[in-house]
Image 1 (spheres, rainbow, N blue to C red):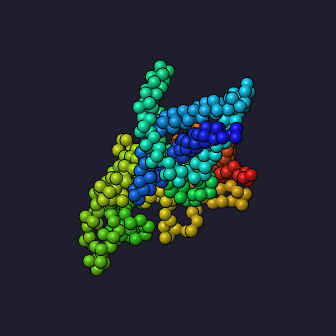
Image 2 (image 1 turned 30 degrees about the vertical axis):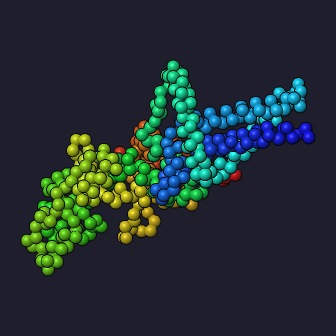
Image 3 (image 1 turned 180 degrees about the vertical axis):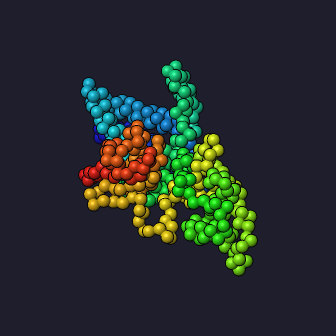
Length: 428
């Protein structure tokens, strides 16, 4: 009979704890929810996802409303419990009620709902979004007043709204999420590299990916026609620069398809064939052009081939659409190339024989290494950069956990190295 008068207050306290659990779980779910997934669900027609996106779009208002509601409910529940049980518990009522409500709030209104929200984040967020929007609308005047006072106080300490916003934040968030999922085994390394490659297009420049003029195949138009045609036939490229007087004086780009068509129309007679007339005008791009800008330029020029010049206009080499795509999907092997690349060879002891011209980025992607790519394009350039000198054959260096041994040097160029990566420790 003594418990009968307590049933209504205890039921009210249980209801308040349930509401507190709603606020606590909502805060966790909506803070951790995947905005990308919610955006896609909204595009697919989900009204609940629309409500989630509206809530997440103003996190400050969302958190303020949830904290206001949760704090009020917890204090109300504790006060009601104290008032209800004080007559029965006497002088120890405050101590006993405080201990009991602490355990009840901690278990039922904090840990349990937040654990559920973490385990079923998206589903929890979709379920609570609509009722939470209604509550936030009701509480918005109070929350707005609290936010105003908070920002006035923070302003006194020099804190300004959105001062930490970064234009690269979205890219960093995507890159970090992909790296995390790869580490957890949910994203393949190839897929991670492709996504990183797409994101890197706005950071990499033509100077990071182009073919140097030293390795560029170009044809002298002053030589006999049969020699020109023979050189074209022996080349593995579909587009070849044509020059006169000096190799840097490029006058046009010859597409081998156009030459083949002309020879077919003439039935192989090339004696009076004007090869220069078959070429298209050369197109030059600065070596500082971002790859993202280069892709747009390729589309606007309807071209896949450009010559690269430095700030003084001197010819540096060439860049193709394939060079840009290789940054996203990896190197595209030619049909005539061997299955394994010859400029990176693995040794039985775990080290690698690497040509000096191999890009650092290629090594990182193909071997899953972590060498820095910011200050040097090639592996030889990286060693020279860190050694602050052009090393001699036989010299060894240790940088970034890797060991580099110079094998060959030609004049001022390091042409071959032995690179020993750090030993991977087995995962516990």
